[in-house]
Every structure is written in C-alpha cells, then in structure tokens.
Image 1 (cartoon, one colour):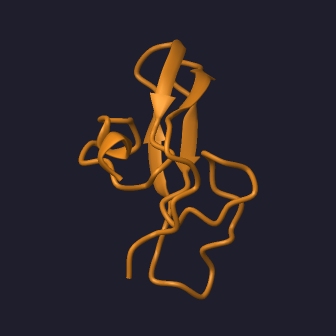
Image 2: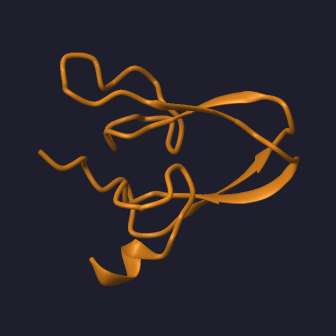
Length: 78
C-alpha cells in the first residue's frame, strides 16, 4: 500500500542542527510534514532523523521521495 499524498509539493521548514525530528511517512498526519501518530494501526512508521545543519529545508510532501525525508522532485511526476 502506498502512503497518502499529503500534498504535491515540498514542505518548507526551518530545522535546527542537532535536533531530532520525526517525518511522517504515511501521509495521514495532521501535523505535516511531521508525525502525529496517525500511522498507528498501519504498516507505516515515521522516519526519525537528526538535522545536520540549521536552516530552511524542503521535506517531501508527496511521500514518494527516493531521498526521505527530503524532497527530490518526485511530486512533479504525480
């Protein structure tokens, strides 16, 4: 089963170096692009990652990226 497409564009977020984030992989979170626990009861799990540097980043909104959690432009072909 494919994840739900939350949006066909990246989410622009400010990340803080050294901070851990939980990127929503199921597409059902009401707190996109981050996990709110909506995946419970599904085969999906959030992606835990630590930001390597502070600043503006583009996180995948379509949930189809080949480079999670970052947008790779896959949404352009959906």
